Image (tube, rainbow, N blue to C red; front, side, top):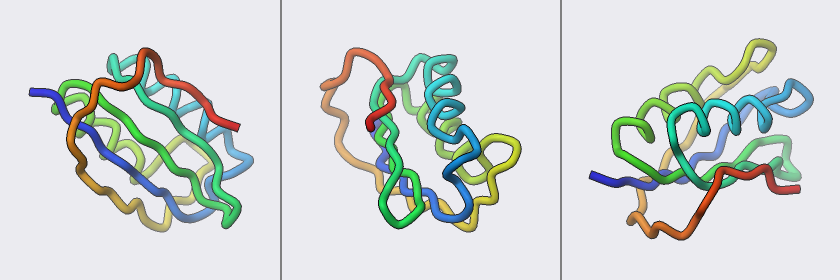
Length: 91
């Protein structure tokens, strides 16, 4: 079963390679989508793929890479669209 999650991560999550680490984690899980920094200091991502892999990235986003201090990760489950070919960092 395919799934899609929209995640906004709050805390000290910029300047700690969060986007790059998210991209690597998503690619290792076979997910597609994107990640970007937000003006308020958070990080936003959308990921799609097999439900179990999406759930793993959601779980990972609650801690992030070493150096990140995640206060919380807000997760919204959305309808799978299949609209991405890769997992990209957006600037």
